[in-house]
Amino acid sequence: MDMPLGDGVAYQQYFGIEHSMLRKAVRDLVRKEILPHINDWEEAGEFPLSLYEQAGKLGFLGVGYPEDMGGTPGDVFLTIVLNEELMRSGSGGLAASLGSHSIALPPIVRKGTKEQIERFVKPVLQGKRVAALGVTEPSGGSDVANLKTTAVRHGDHYVVNGSKTFITSGVRADQLTCAVRTGGDGAHGISFLVIERDTPGYKTSDKLKKTGWWASDTAEIYFDDCKVPVENLIGEENKGFYIIMENFQMERLQLSVMANMTAQLAYEESLLYARQRDAFGKKLKGFQVIRHKLAEMATLVEVSREFTYRVAAKINAGENQVKEVSMAKNFACSVSDKVTYDAVQILGGYGYMRGSMVERLYRDNRILSIGGGTTEIMREIISAHIL
Image 1 (tube, rainbow, N blue to C red):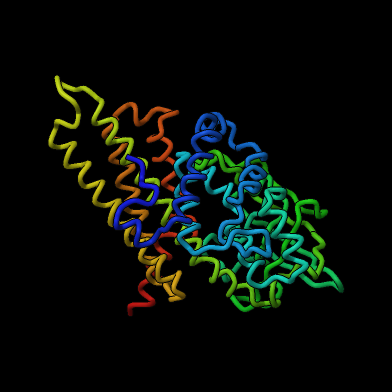
Image 2 (cartoon, rainbow, N blue to C red; image 1 turned 90 degrees about the horizontal axis):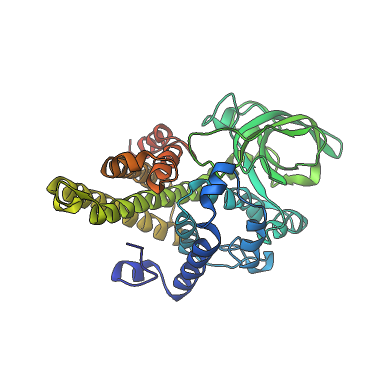
């Protein structure tokens, strides 16, 4: 039961012809170039770098970015379409790594100089460089305000020491949009630097072995007296925390979309299996317990997706949705938790087998309520707004 390419009243409320054209183009790429290889790429722990360049040439990496930067301008729903269709690969890891620039570039786009745009944005949108975001540290995941990586200025460069961990695309990234401490303790001492992988003292770990998102190369990155030119500073010194907070709203929206698509795909696989599987002399769909489970899955997916779209529409209109996007992320992840669990239950042993779409979705789902701010952090944000 594929989601429509723009048909239906609900879709017309948010999506138009431009969105439908992009949806079809990305879906075609996924079907022809990704799905035939995704199992091998999952086992390899990465996909070919050539996929970045292919996506860049097709204009997919530039979706939502200004035209003068080599992008394809559009509203929030254009980026949602891209994310939804990449998720049809059935691999959250591929979608996350191919889209790692979507959290790495916005700080440069918003606060960067023309020279920084030329060096660090345009080549990434062309698929010629891989960009990653470096915020999380081994000493404290969601405690961003107390990050430890230091950048001490000496003349025309900063000397960076410390480490980052759980970095999506970290093994292969050519550049890291990196949060560092340039000032005192707390949120007011944080800045953003772009650190290039060929900088002396910049080292990456081997690919970290994860429960899910196998096709995403994830790494710990170490800085040992890395000399980073002052011209690589993004925005004002000691104002980086606010850039991180701006970044989080869109990251959390896209994680909501990923959770909804994870649930959608798990539901679709369950529906297909229930229609085809014979048990005790009849199709699985003939059992009321299965029909009711599918009905609940369908309802949860529909409600979660509609709420996410509504929040996206308000963000698109320029409204502050910090509370609401936190709600959307938590709800979407809770829905995905339940739907992927139930999908494995419906498929039984087949849902537990490597190579099964449902098995992968079940594994990949677990990171969604952790990345971009944990469920608990989202609740803190929500409570701060309602109390």
